[in-house]
Amino acid sequence: MYSQKIIETLSNPKNVGEIADADGIGTVGNASCGDIMEMFLKIENDVIVDAKFKTFGCGAAIASSSVATELIIGKTIDEALKVTNADVVETLEGLPPQKIHCSVLAEEAIAEAIKDYRAKQEKK
Image 1 (cartoon, rainbow, N blue to C red):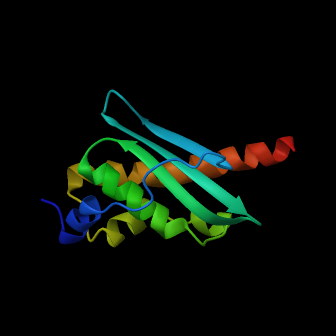
Image 2 (image 1 turned 180 degrees about the horizontal axis):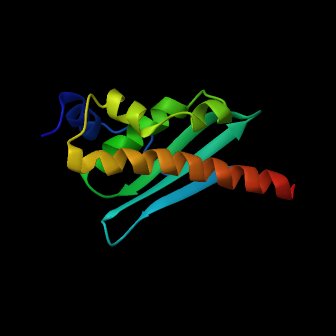
């Protein structure tokens, strides 16, 4: 059911946790479907220098969160907004059709965290 890349990612997920002084936080999903993803971003000069996640959900959701953080660290905000669920699926070497929504959550979490960051910047 899962690719070798997903199994490897689940065995050693990257960037798990929180950033205490995060510049942007995005929370997506809902408890009724069972997947909730929270992404934390540290941003300096419009570049994502760190990203962490906390995900409550299935293995595909955790793997999607992990690779999403890896895909955006080092990117500018605008570059990170171009990361799609298809990029997450490709990095994971595929997801079962019933798990594609997990990659969509990852894309949405990135967008929500950046939206939060921008809203905080406007208040400064």
